Length: 168
Image 1 (cartoon, helix red, strand yellow):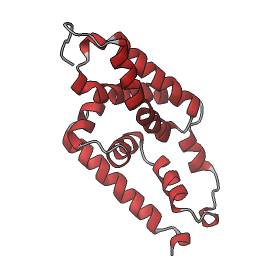
Image 2 (image 1 turned 180 degrees about the horizontal axis):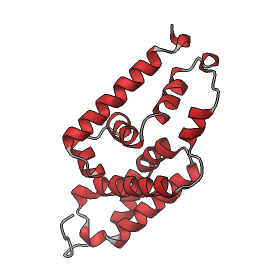
Image 3 (image 1 turned 180 degrees about the vertical axis):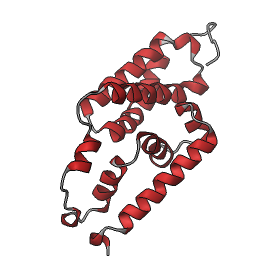
Image 4 (image 1 turned 135 degrees about the vertical axis):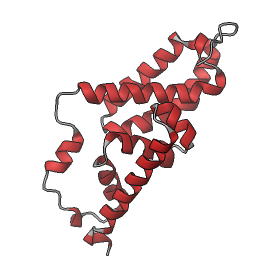
């Protein structure tokens, strides 16, 4: 981010940023970790970091900065978390999907089975509406990697849902 030390963010501008972006960042993090408390902590950490670095974040990069910060904090948390993740629990449980009739619920469970990188880029693209270029900036992947991860995630989801007896 370029230095903007001439006009650092005001408290009012910061509050506007919170109102505009806190819910979106929270949804993104929550879809990745499925833990509301940890998701709130990550969002809070992201906004705290924004405030600390407010003189270095330009207004046009604000949203990308917040999502990038949340994404990196999320990755750090996943790496440091020694307990079983919800993803491992879903894989190890004997889940009977034929009991579910809600496609949204099935899709949500399928998304949890994706590798972290694929899940993150898919959610940024399909749920948050970011462009490939923006996702590349947020995740520090290149655009080609982003496209490949999104493609692989969509193929997995299509095959996974296509195999579900309940949808036939």
